[in-house]
Length: 95
Image 1 (cartoon, one colour):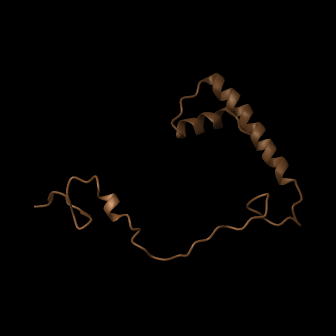
Image 2 (cartoon, rainbow, N blue to C red):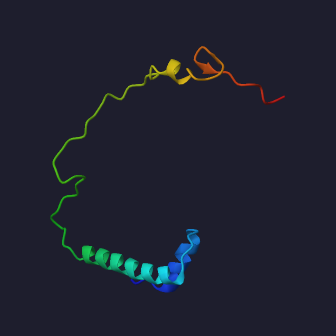
C-alpha cells in the first residue's frame, strides 16, 4: 500500500490540519516509509512466539477489589462554597 499526495491532503482535511503542498509531499514520503516498515514486520515468522506485555517477566501488582467510600468525602467538598453532610449544595435551577 502506498500513500499518494491526494490521500495525504484528504487525511489532513479530515483532521482539520492545514498542510501546504510542500509539506504534503514530504508527509507522503514519510508515511510510505512507515507503511513499508510495517509491511516488513508482517513478514516476520512469529508462529512459536508467545504474546507478551513486557520484555521482562513480571507479575501485575494486584489489590483487593473492595467497595469503599474512598474516605475522601470531606477532602472533596472542602473547597465548595456550600456543603451539607459531605454533599455539595447548589442553587435551585428548576422552577
